[in-house]
Length: 133
Image 1 (cartoon, rainbow, N blue to C red):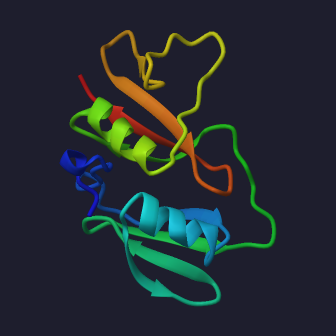
Image 2 (image 1 turned 180 degrees about the vertical axis):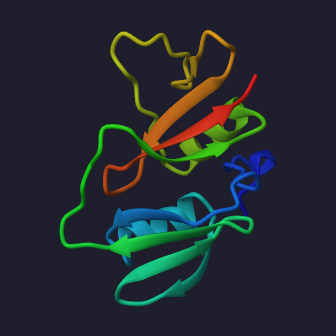
């Protein structure tokens, strides 16, 4: 599912539970399952649970979504250009930040050589991809 070679983020390095506040069923479910390619394991009135290569991702239903100004979930990828292209083909728009030099894919290269791209889910949560140097 989450496979960098297929144009999707690779979460195999992340082995712990993550909680993302969102709408549970609906746009959040479709985004994480359809767009990102995560396998839906369980869904109830409180949450959707996805399998991301042995990492559980719980998308929890809440009345009001908090929109922090930072990345809430990120993936390590092998080829950030390929993954960005694959996600763009699925309708993902990458975020551009004023004052930050980003390439055509919206990727910023850190002084240490890591490459990072940001995008949002349907609830406005900031997600990221990182290709480490």
